[in-house]
Image 1: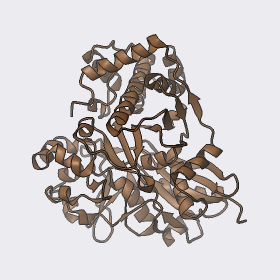
Image 2 (image 1 turned 90 degrees about the vertical axis):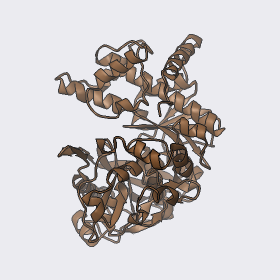
Image 3 (image 1 turned 45 degrees about the horizontal axis):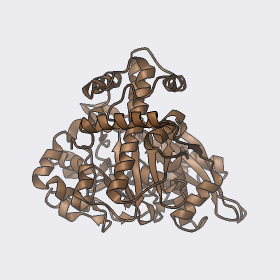
Length: 505
């Protein structure tokens, strides 16, 4: 390969509903090159057995191997590196021989029900937040581990690997714990960027189960001979630690200039907030349920989890089960014609966490806060999108107030960047311009961290983002609401606030 030719990097990007392997072609020379292509996509279908919801991790790993084989074919050579990002909080347990002790449990499983109250009896919520800065979510790794106490699998475990670290271990035989994902466990101190022993010890959580921490850009081993044989790649092929929490990678690829921006990383969840230099650990921040997760290059992702497009995904699944399947494109077009803000809910309500009967639950939630219940798919879809826009507004306004950082632009990245109605509604609700894209931000951030580690590009986050801006063209949405429209958004936001949004925890 010519030294001026872009290098190919393989990004394994596993989401809650599908996995994909992308090849990024990157060069920082001249004007810079950044090109991304999807080479393999595969479903991620959780499986319930004996009453417990599991990830089908071996199927996902098979998809990764197929994707790496496709990456070599697409690039015409082995990738210069492989990086892995996935969702957060879940893990696999290994015995002393390295064998997996059962399929990882899905974060939507009910095994953590009631665990927060048990933990609070040992560590009050204020003390827990002061030590870890992590928002309350009932499925945080900490609660999963306290729920697993006394189980045969945990008793037999020699290692605990978060999902991206488990995939990396199977590829390389080397175990590590990548920091951005570790920071979602509620077991890391965001100030020291190390384990919060003051949390783990009183709860009886054995931190020695976790391999050593490693940061984005660190080497994570090389593909094993059997992996090379399975994928047809010629070695050595290094694996590089990236921002292995997919939101950490997505935020790294936000095409912002300067620091006066908010982001919404959209998909199954909406992660809405700011990028900061230091955590915000105040009691007010805890009560607002903001999290301080660690990002690339020493940054802090100060954000709130919002239920996200899961609400619409579950509605689509429910309508299909009722033999009334909906075309998403047609549904969004019909939703755009529905008058706005007739129906809305608190999209951050944990009542929406579990799967099943989502259209009915949305209608019930509307009635509970005094809003009109939607009728039919188009009205329900508009209700979901209006509600998400309101939740984005609330999170971004709260993040600015709590951190003291003002913003003048909202960047929407991830799958929701393709949803023009959601982007426009978010601009209208926030009263700020929205820049939408890239949709594959997690894979791009994954590739860029690999490329920098390999020397294909130089610089910090500002330089990586400049390359994204120079080579990709996002869409811009200006706030369209007039004075009456802004007043309608204000009234809806006030109604949700009066119903107790953000204070139920």
